Image (tube, rainbow, N blue to C red):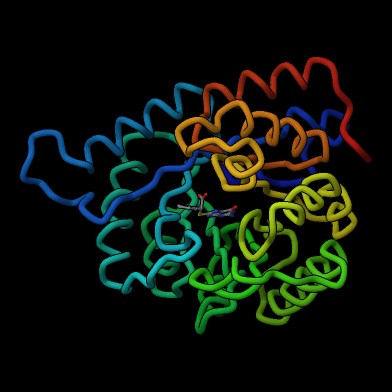
Length: 281
Ligand code: 7PM
């Protein structure tokens, strides 16, 4: 798809038809091992093809380095993981690719090699990121996180979770505009699981539509997260039903991009909602 399909202005009369499914491609550190005939690199490409056939509109590469409690990944390792895979996907498939990174150098190289979207859980707060994006024209997802991955789940606290996150978005939108990144390129994500308690995550999901007041498309990422697992007491391999429920609610609340592991099942669930529902205005 073209990046213009991420434009919130398209088909304003048919809001549900513009919901996009972002399929998560997690890249493991040994993606590059070419020892075996069937490497992690090849299996990643097969996973991409499957997600495209299942109805994904965007493939999101990365994510491992941003998980709660994760250690930092160095720049060279991240580049080695992401860039060859990005190049291979763009040469083999006609699909929008998003790169999940917080590093300016990885953003820059990704954009050079055809990335269609930058997805930053640190909302371009790391050094050099605003400048790199200002030199390009790709859309960028600004995610909210309280604290840092290693410690963020320790004791998340908010005065008013919606108002606090809205303030954060407003300040990042302003920083982007000041740096020369047009507001029309921005996507907002409240960052489920990133410095939020179980209860706070569900308060957020219930009120997701409130962020529409900022006039930008909302991305929602709840797939297989602890907010599903801890509520249902389900291991990560048993969170599909709960994840589908959160995807349906997010779409009802007006989210425009739903980030998921299980593309086929989510596409089906959202088609059912699309057949009956009207979004929250
Ligand atoms: C392990 C645990 C691996 C958690 C990966 C994760 C989001 C994101 C991630 C999100 C946006 C995951 C997370 N989550 N980017 N990257 N929004 N925009 O569950 O919610 O994929 S990493």
